[in-house]
Length: 242
Image 1 (cartoon, rainbow, N blue to C red):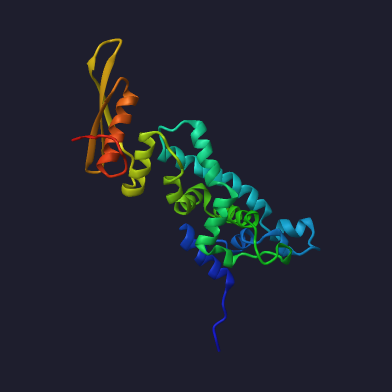
Image 2 (spheres, rainbow, N blue to C red; image 1 turned 90 degrees about the horizontal axis):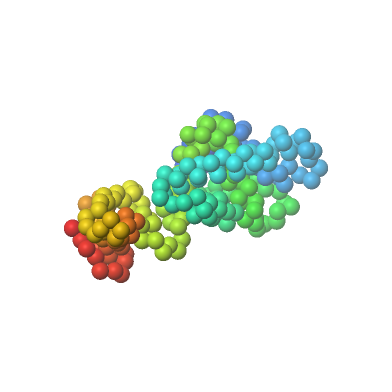
């Protein structure tokens, strides 16, 4: 006789593998993975609150935003608020959440009613992702939630800049992707006059470094970043390498 399969145990194992968090409350996770349509057309509002993930989705949306803000501020310390907001919006979009649900295989452990049809739209997949994150937050607090978001979104956070014209930001993308660390700059005034100063910057990533000069600290750092990008084969300027 074959051993019976425990869907709650399978769901907990799948979520632990995808997020790094082992849920203590399997019923909470089951609710996070249950779309309201799975309760049936005759379900009351009270039934949906008890069995479906609508409230967890609401919570998950909020704590996902907080975790992404924290992770983006850590990964991109020199990026202004407007750019961070655009990157967060891309990461928290329905399209991104739906793809993550597909990539992790978590959809197989979720319940959706027939009203949704055989093809689940992005909105439902995103709903389920937020429901799972809401459940993780209630089960383990913000540290568990932040760890789950970092694990699920790490590669996308490194690529969140999209098309970048700033060589310092482009170097940050490269450094995070290849060395999981940020570039470090040493910048000082090395010449010029009071009204027309000249700065020299040296940027270091792991065992690679390059120098650049400019009429301001930012321009010198841009020049150094561009030089290091050329050194590692990710740019097209003439480098000044040390």
